[in-house]
Length: 327
Ligand SMILES: Nc1ncnc2c1ncn2[C@@H]1O[C@H](COP(=O)(O)OP(=O)(O)OP(=O)(O)O)[C@@H](O)[C@H]1O
Ligand SMILES: [Mg+2]
Figure 1: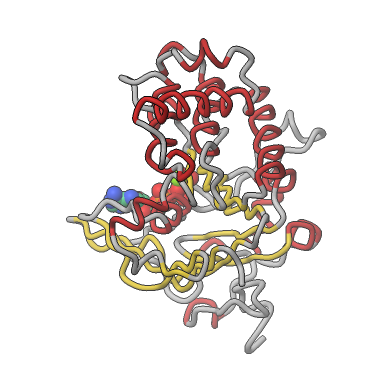
Figure 2: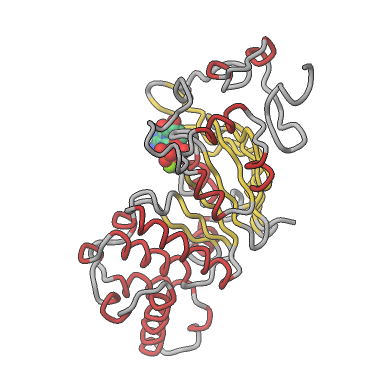
């Protein structure tokens, strides 16, 4: 069994304009020690997927209305609030796009990492209060060292606003990894950073994943990042997974017209000077999504059936009428 199995997840937001069907039956899994990339255009539901898994969807207006999230055989949607809090930050940790807003501005970096250790670390259980504090601080210094920070003691005593974006993201990663999580969820971890820093952070993540034997759900809109970092990939479109599989297979032969379009939009060295090609049309409104296949209004291969009936994920690989059912 895989470490994480998300099945038929549906998350809606109830707004004045109507019901936003942000996730409409999302299923995928993340294997042990595997890195799974979740890709798709803005607004397709990537962050809502991450927040649903960890039960951080703001309610109201949001609600997870169906599905299951099996993590180590336990359905996270059914465990108590107390239990999910114990899992967050320990078994499953998260890093976000904006490290500065994810860190607390009024505490030092070291205090924030130490706090996570104090909250979750079983090894500290039998120590006195003073020893606990000392040990948690030592662990946070070590965590900062592990993420490649040269002067961990000085950085530990700094506040987030005193550090660069790249340093904050390294600190966020230290905070996420300090309790040795089995699953790391990284939502656009490098998008807000400079290109050179992005590459460094990705390298760092790759090293740590290997070192700690963690599984990763890596959310990004950058297919280049997926190709470099992930074992598997799931492509989302308008609240659904429309293609998934092994990274090598999907990149060698993308099947869904949307995936093909995304791949053509990757800037290559030769094409760098040209304008970035994008897929015509825009992401559909999730209050009144298109009938049938949600991609059909933008699809160059659209057929009658595509407008009427939603395709299932044929062979567990692609949800498109070009590859299954009535041709
Ligand atoms: N609190 C909310 N209230 C209403 N709608 C929401 C809320 N949060 C998310 N949504 C809607 O859910 C849909 C999916 O949003 P989500 O943030 O998951 O997109 P995303 O794929 O992460 O995009 P991006 O690449 O821009 O981060 C969007 O239509 C969004 O407007
Ligand atoms: Mg997002």
